[in-house]
Length: 326
Image 1 (cartoon, one colour):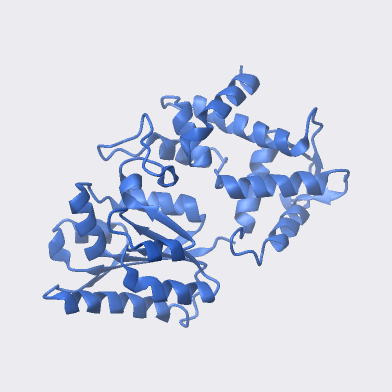
Image 2 (image 1 turned 180 degrees about the horizontal axis):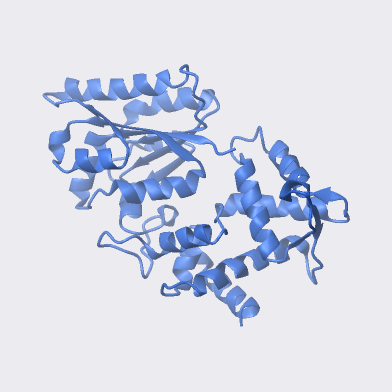
């Protein structure tokens, strides 16, 4: 089941920071990233602040599905009122009966650290988003993950610590790496984040080793239960299923016909080397093959950003592409 996500946007903090950095604030790029990173549905979207900071902002946020909570900023206390409303609304979601798995707090303000602490105590995953030059260090350290919007909006991977990669968009165009991910998803090969992908492939190959009486649904249940209580590596059943589909098409596993896919018998395909390493390489080769067939420029560094959130894997992927897709 897809997990639900709640997004709370501190407009004053982000718009002012974007203006200082001379970066166009594009909420759609941010939402695209969040959908990919959280693997969930963004059900709740709320924004708080003074709309006079930028006349186009209310329209853009409304089109993107945000509920707008306007506070005209007369002084610092007015700003505090907006922050307080954002905190109250976030806390209210904990008792209104809707169970959000992930909370995204788009702010760099350290005043929100108590809210982060409370959400994490309730077992929620908290992702912070803000600009590097205004983000509070204490807030960054406290969040489960913190994404720097300046890197994201300039077409760089948020994990890249400020390094700019070739073929990225700086003029408002969607970055090539994100276009790759979208196209792969449309072809049925959704890119689960690399760390989670590795966990599933490791568990898959270990569980199937020496077994020939396992069905598809059993594998999903087994892996899901192993990581159900792990807040750092929590895996959704959808994510596990997505990785299994890639593994099937990459011939990592052999799937016999069943009444349904969930009841279909699964076996580990014969490999010449180590099963886990071979599984990773075959899946990456499949991704690269599909990317190479797109009506897009083929850029191995951007493929690395799409698959591993870092261009540092480009050399490895080039070897894999040449080995499997020559």
